[in-house]
Length: 167
Image 1 (tube, rainbow, N blue to C red):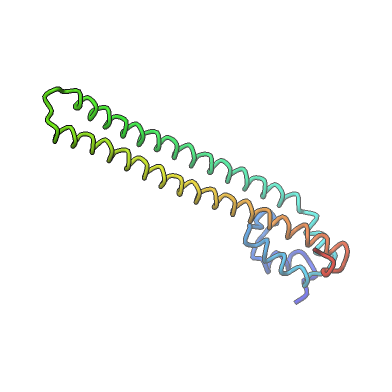
Image 2: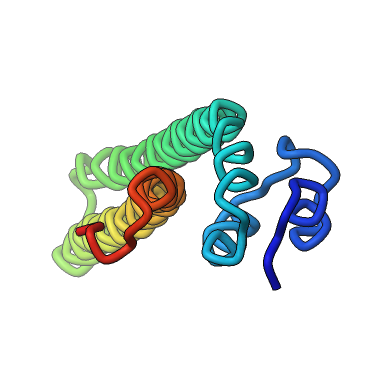
């Protein structure tokens, strides 16, 4: 189907205005470009600043959410480490008693070592969590960048009329 006006393109995308052009619809729009009348496609692309605002706002939201997640995680980690320090302080205080036999002393030392192992495991778990969060942020930013590239590539094709020249 050849799209000869903006209304047909919007209808095919299921949107009322270009402001409703979601990330999902961007790829659908890019796929439709070869079927659009050149003038219609140029008119749509002229409205790219609206998409740029959308993209910028999306990346700002992504950044705020990422920072919020990191702050909450940091607070949680601080509480976990403080709890382990408190436990070790109690165990250390018990070790200062002169009336402990060797078995009791060994037990308290073993408990201190166990808290250290648990804290280390929690730290490793947190690093895996942060790695996963980082990967999601990179994927989100990459998707946003890819969407922008689709628009820029589409514009280049429309202006030059030859898709085979795009590298």
